[in-house]
Length: 145
Image (cartoon, rainbow, N blue to C red; front, side, top):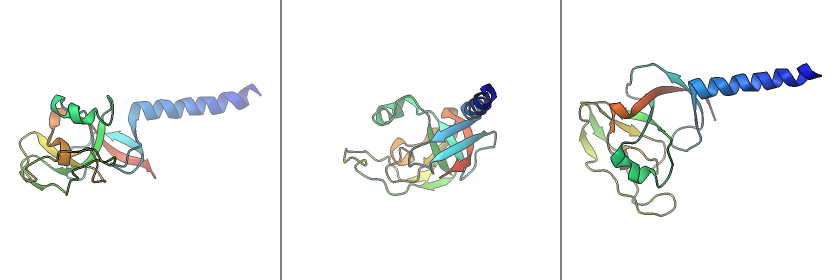
């Protein structure tokens, strides 16, 4: 009887430990919801990254999330031309949002343009460029739904 409880609990503990050490869980609509595995891949167009907003970006981000890194897809690398997708003047609850300008240009050195999957995503449309120093991990989908 003791083993019938011990084995499932051990497996659950092992899965939780693995996820907490090697994965991120996304519950927002910015990317497909699910579990993302940390990788050591170089950042390229289309890569998924995890980053902490800069101090100047925090004033906007703190209206929506508290002390958690953001997960987005890289849309343009340093030195590449970019064109931001359309942004909204309001968030999903009708509150005013200020889109980032310029909407087109060349990505500065050591900066990235990141995009989410919804027009309300806290991404470069509102935050501007993400410094390479703010990126903490590259990730790849492990289990998404």
